Length: 125
Image (cartoon, rainbow, N blue to C red; front, side, top):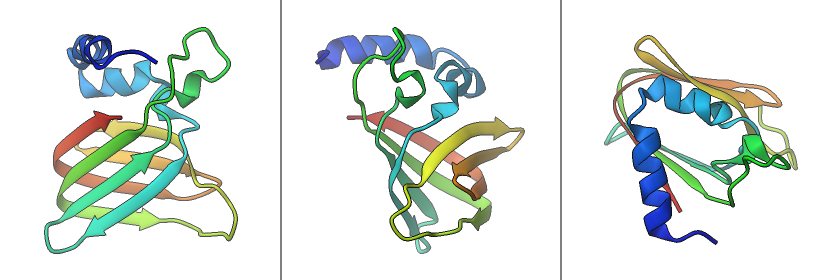
């Protein structure tokens, strides 16, 4: 397992990119499993926990190691969620993209989240 210092150096390098380029460089977080999603109406925040930041690179030389991803999003004024929930079905990320002033999260097997945001925080564990 890599040390925190190496991970911080790597992320500092990656975070010098524009957010759109960062998501592209990590394969739009494709195949990451959604472990938890919490919406707080009072504080207008959406928190999403994904199982693996590098899931798109599984079984490829580019795969690093398992790193959980936490999105903490301070919402602006638009939130559109459409998710079909099925018992015993894993909800995965198809892709996460920044489209103009919106963040769009496409889900697999089906569904989406589209939102405008003031701040977006990303952390890894």
